[in-house]
Image 1 (tube, rainbow, N blue to C red):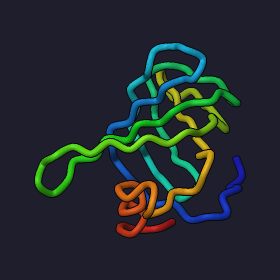
Image 2: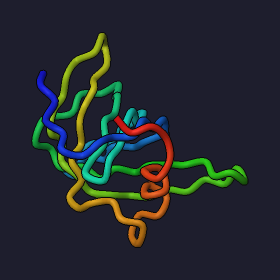
Image 3: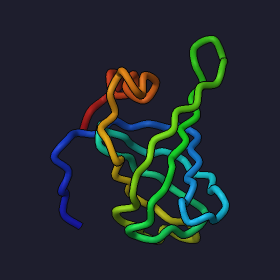
Image 4: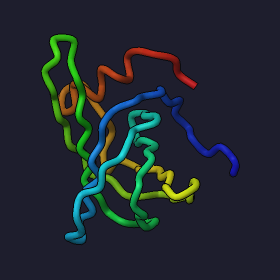
Length: 113
């Protein structure tokens, strides 16, 4: 698969819930990478390309409190990986410090590819 990203990404390990907007149950996932326009995740359950989702990202802060931010998106691609699934989610809007401070903070640290 050719690389089509226009924006670099940062690697991120975070707890994620992917909530399909069609009424199916929320799915646990692990974030793999993120940029201002979307994120890569691994899921145990299959999602469909083109499916609209609400993504909840749960962060542990330095003082061990948990912060959750939610952002809407659409599944852009899905690939089976063993018995699991890798998926790319494109956010409906860009991650900004004003509206998504915890997600934005992730983009300010770490290695960009």
